[in-house]
Image 1 (cartoon, rainbow, N blue to C red):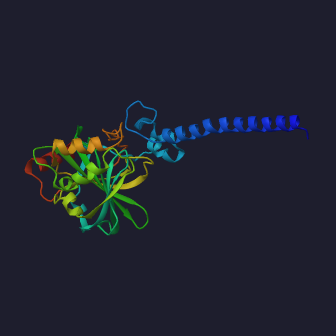
Image 2 (image 1 turned 90 degrees about the horizontal axis):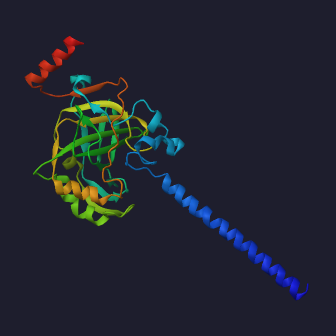
Image 3 (image 1 turned 90 degrees about the vertical axis):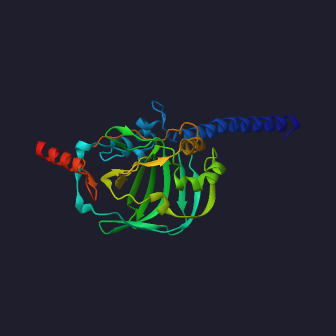
Length: 291
């Protein structure tokens, strides 16, 4: 092969390589954009907002098509008093944990045995806790400032969640008070995880006895159903500063990370309360008479 032919062949080879490289760059960028687009957010009307979660991925279809979705409104006229539910049967204990900025929320992940919740003979181990602001569940249409979810999992992979509602008050939440330095460390650092030592979930749970119970779903994609929900009736206090700390720590667009209320679709909502006030008892009696 002569020098001219060799040069022409080398030039053609370089051009072909350049064309392949230029084609690969948009493909890689497109893949990155697709991955970003698959993330969900809480911005109403956005392509990745709550009303569109079900169409982002096939495995998230429940978010749109499910008939037992959460959260819901705990409307008084739909609630039935069920004393047979009994007191919550849980045995929590201090355990090693870490705090994680998941972008859409702040989560405490238990790395040790933090105890369990027993419902109808099934044990659900406490796995993690995270916060939503404002609250996801509403009571008679009222949305509270914040909601804590204590997420449990059974040996069969089924979920049970305890939800605790908060309103802004002068008294800070003691559980969050202990976590504040760690929340600051991971603020605005998506996927950042920090060890926080031993955490006592009993401080988060509190001692209130009355609760609502219904069957629902996870409130984030994939919105899996069959979740046993327990919403503590007593509303707790969180300071405005603590609430702002949680909101500022998450990724932009998730400061308000509450999914809209979903249709009840004729599901039962039960209430356990050890002692009813006279007025509440009369209210339930009136509802039964009018039924």
